[in-house]
Image (tube, rainbow, N blue to C red):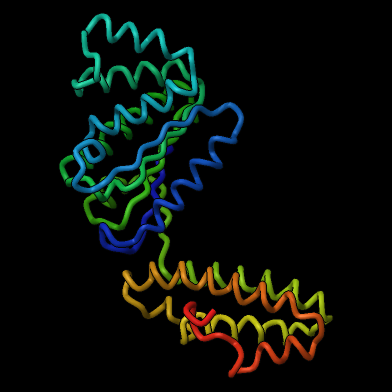
Length: 267
């Protein structure tokens, strides 16, 4: 069964990085030839974005928007049921199943599953896992579904047979180190620095980004969101300045403790 879930170690309504990731995945999947893509962003407390019917409407709308051959099926359903705004769960489920039968390869991405009530997310998971099984039993690989969510016990249990990818705050810290190293490599090439000097620059900039070297590993999740965004911006500003230094002496001066900014505010 090709159902995947990206799980984030964070409580609901706090960590927004998952939506950024979901958007990036959607953007990249839309570039894959031969795939029709449907997606939906769930939102806590909004009935238009946190119900099974809302998910059905959103996914069907995305698929129809990008594939004109689905219009006849939608119009036929509208004419035979009189359901102009898709207010019936049964009609929505049947219509989505019909659309998937028409399409050769489909990828569906649902972000924020955790932002729906437990009963609703159970319905959503049940429907899409059934659709995946039915489609792939007929044509293997014809339907892939990705749920992006924070780590909730009921979601993990419902997706126990699916592939799960767990992302933690420490993963962000590692990515930012890679980002800093990319910048430091440019500076190393400009001034013919040793690898040791390059890593010293990375270490100093990361320490100064928010005042402590391992902030992302020990902060609360609300702080994590702000620190993550701030550190990226800090690294961008500081490394831009370092890359503009014309001589090694100028570079060394900018790296001195009394000159290197401490935190985003000083940068």
